[in-house]
Amino acid sequence: MVKKTRKTSAIDIGISDAERGAIVEGLSHLLADSYTLYLKTHNFHWNVTGPMFRTLHLMFMELYTEQWAAVDLIAERIRALGAPAPGTYEAFASLTSIKGSKALPNATEMIRELTEGQATVVRTARALFKVAEKANDQPTCDLLTQRMQIHEKNAWMLGSLLEE
Image (cartoon, rainbow, N blue to C red; front, top):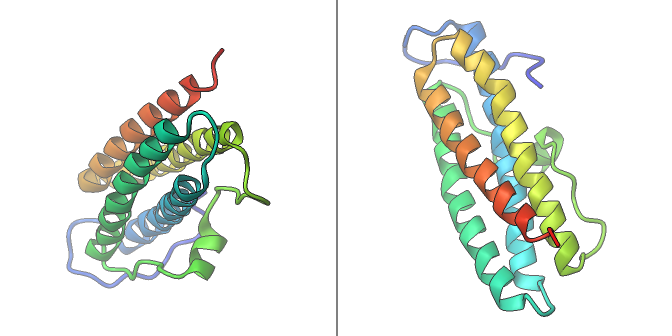
């Protein structure tokens, strides 16, 4: 996931420019995944139908509301490391690992896609954790730990809806 380093300019906080660049690159992927998952979840909230409408409509709203707050935290961490945060659809599309929906899926497929999206965010955060830990970047590690915990729980809860 973390292939290239991004140029940063910031106050000396004890993390080298190369390490900052690698962390920023990973956080940019995490931001793109998080924003893409937010957008997909919000879309599904608007468009879900079927016997579980009310349950899923409310659940999706809880998920996208939490994700909306998270994208700000991730972007602010990128800024604190001295780099600009990506913020366009084009940038997110080039950075995200989350697959888009070809058409509007049914409720069961929405749950499947969101479960996979949650797991994707966890994998992105987990890959970056190693880089941040090696750089002794505790604030990023803390952010990543929180994001992994939330997305793992969300994946479990969504996945539970698919069990018979």
